[in-house]
Length: 451
Image 1 (spheres, rainbow, N blue to C red):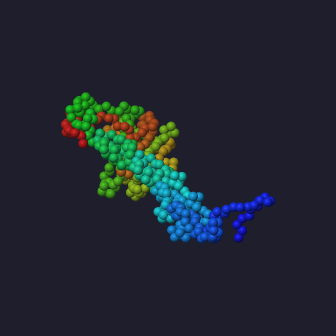
Image 2 (image 1 turned 90 degrees about the vertical axis):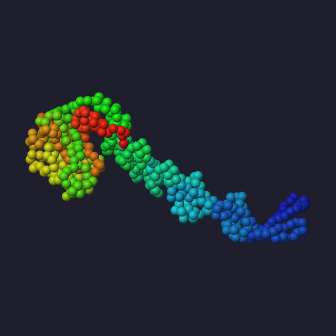
Image 3 (image 1 turned 120 degrees about the vertical axis):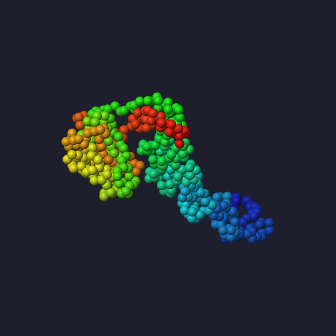
């Protein structure tokens, strides 16, 4: 076996000391020691042994296998960093977990997505989900622990705010009849402040809060002498609205319950009747319509009107185009109640551009009218009002609208909204149209702290 070749200048001699020379033969190291020329068996070769947790130990091949590691071969040691490290795992809740073994088996078993060996959570963006906050807003890409730590509601794997409807804070009614729109779902602040929470998704625009203590005229929280002084200070007739064209004073919308509703099982419904009000009993309505300059619009808070039970109380219904049949119908009229008109004295003649298929509607050319215009059913009479329509909606729903009115004296008014803001005469506790001794008695009858 040639161990080396040394070339020197002519005439020179060569001397040296090999010291100790290691020769690797397969996996056995043999050492030549020049002190005595003997050949000694030194032992098996050493190399890096990598374990599943990423640690490394310099081992013989045999010892590495016994320890459950992966031997990296002769001449490779741990100092060279040959071992793969366990990677990052994206868990279903959007969080990232650093694994303790290469391959990611535990990650997959836990429903996660293994990002590969030698990956790290610090450099990994795991996909989150939609998170609904208490104020009704939504945040995307939130991990579940971060969402719940904020007191919010995590919407689940794969959700996005664009496709999630978060609960919205609702309306809070107080004993004085005022309404406050809450800023957090659940109504905890409302209840803490002594209010009544009407539930998530409700809105002060569609809630009429009852005044639980109407005799507390000075808003002190108690009914007492201050309220009597308030009554005395307002003594006399209550002010009325200023009449407009044709002595018209405005529209009112009032709840109506017909005979036989409960007997026939018609629960869960509300009927609203729309009236035109006048100061002159000889005044009246000739037509209700929409025009190019004043379109007519009628909507319900849930977008649906109901017709008689033979059609369907649960399906959206249009305003009846030419007739009505029952007291629980939605219909339009001028002066006629829920008995059927004969088509000549009262002609609703109402049609919607969409083909009478919708609940809510807007029109700039349709309406309903009297034929002839001066027919007595359109006259206000001693009640000083004319019925214009009945709208049947789901219980708790309301009706809003804008119309143009034509009066029997030839005048008209555009953009009339309903229901109007009522004229306030809070001191008229007895409701007799005046502030007098009856209202003092009402105060005394309610004496004490308000509920």
